[in-house]
Image 1: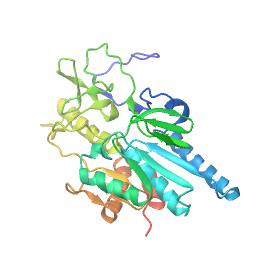
Image 2 (image 1 turned 180 degrees about the vertical axis):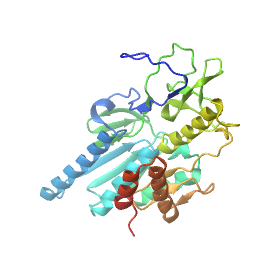
Image 3 (image 1 turned 90 degrees about the horizontal axis):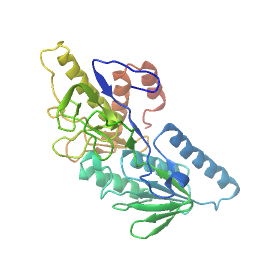
Image 4 (image 1 turned 45 degrees about the vertical axis):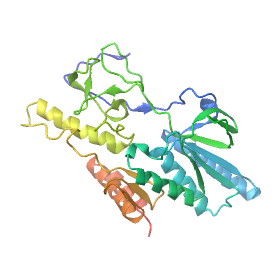
Length: 314
């Protein structure tokens, strides 16, 4: 039921995604840039262009940038900022980069400690100060207050954390966790409060709370949503009587390999063993998976445009 109309269904797939959240931390909504949308990315670019313009007239102009959270979005953004700084050969004293991460390691959703360390080493070598196990208590225009009482001076804060799902009414007796996500089973069927799966209601993407082998849930990446979508489609085909079995469930199917971009020519992946891969191998694997994604969704325009502009340089 919506404000405009009522819709009848035989099967329902909920995939409403997520919205930005400041966790109720004072000052974040007023002074930080939420990096969870295309508009947020454009705001970052505008800030950097403005800094370069100011540098022409005032070479002593400085910029202190802080990125909050060490998930895929935060790490990828900080890697781009570091590459921007090095590409323009900006004096290290003119731009300072700090990554504030509440978790004990970077990229916790990838569940590979070796990748976390490789990500930290990559950023540190490029002049980024990484503060793990550090929580933000409050924020003003030019200052972050951390939980341990430390005051961090900053000009720009990009808030890449605090994703929360779109609110879902709980009048139907479905299981919703503390993050507002719908609890699902191994076929991504939505569970009732009693833990019984609904046969015709599914959830995928950030709205679905799915765990495998009692580990942390799927990362908030497009590949994770695609992984869930494939399992849901297989289950639907089975329930419609179009296949003799439902193939593999999420409990039986291996998680896809995830790729984290560290600039145009570098990356990290957990697709090649426990230690993952970094640098040259992940660099080409990252671009290969991006091209296969466009091919998978049948976007010839996206495929050829990416091949022209997004492929790595030598």
